[in-house]
Length: 58
Image 1 (cartoon, rainbow, N blue to C red):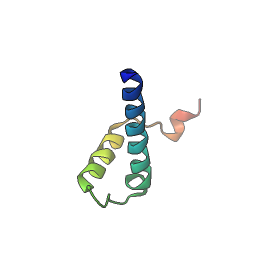
Image 2 (tube, rainbow, N blue to C red; image 1 turned 30 degrees about the vertical axis):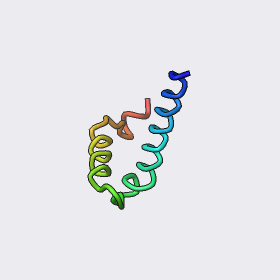
Image 3 (cartoon, helix red, strand yellow; image 1 turned 90 degrees about the vertical axis):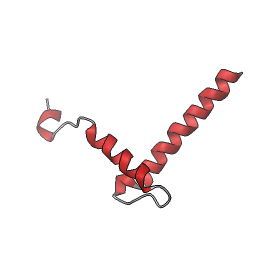
């Protein structure tokens, strides 16, 4: 029972983080309550590798 509750809480936390990212930093706006969190999210996404147009067409 405890494992189910913990997994549900983790799922809600991840879904909330995705919703906050899409609502603010993805559009280039600052989070109204915690701008440091938005900056950290943006730095984390910028660190991920991205395929360029020439690399995506195989």
